[in-house]
Length: 142
Ligand SMILES: [Zn+2]
Image (cartoon, rainbow, N blue to C red; front, side, top):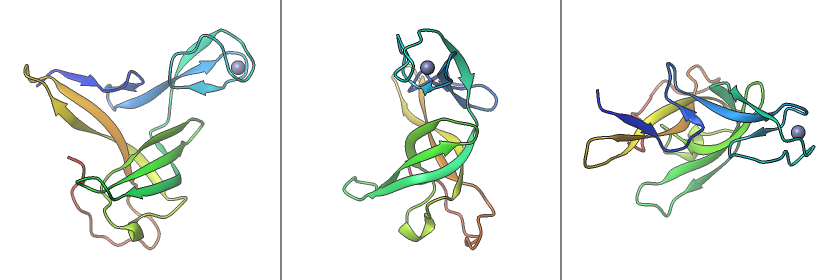
């Protein structure tokens, strides 16, 4: 098995892979980057919190200028946390609806000379979405 490293520190490649975030111990505000103080309440103590892998699509935009068009999205995770990431496995606007349920997925973003894989994450639609067709293509960003 090749050595793998996450492209961002808040992606943990456990079983299953999941996101973590710094949570303010006073007010519960969540931050993906390292903070010296909470922007909401100015407390300086944080704990690491594991975030849910499932969430709801809050906003999205199709980026068509890239060699391979992709969907940039904002996902509100169950139980708290809002994360910006690409939507995987969709290539047509009609496949995406606001409020649709999505789940975290990881993919190999690149491999260095030693064979170490850089692992990135995105979200893909959860199966069983109402009115969704059964056809499923293999994720577009690989
Ligand atoms: Zn706070």
